[in-house]
Length: 169
Image (cartoon, rainbow, N blue to C red):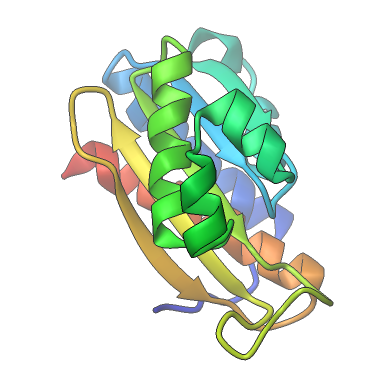
């Protein structure tokens, strides 16, 4: 698990630019699948001029039904492991790639708060998954501190940092 300092808008824009540059350099299209961030990853990426050349789609799925129908998450995964789990993050990112023509995807699912946490999964628990077409999905657990906005900002930053890392390793 890892926590980050709460990034500013300018820092998020900088991280988005670094990730976007790598997506473009590799001539890929990108798709995002977001739950706890409500489309914030897609927003910060599409704030960049020219993003239509490399940004394919963004999907926001809060309900189990949306995760199942839009991203192909298995209902048994949601029932057994919950929406905030490694398994769900992996299925979200894999489903996003399967449903769109992108070459790389990022997915996030977590508990931004202020409510919804449990002793096993407290507020700030976030799973982020990444996958390249033809590769294996991987996911990482984060435990972010702060209020709802702080958790969401840190999630966006970690997703973008991990995206760039996925493309450069």
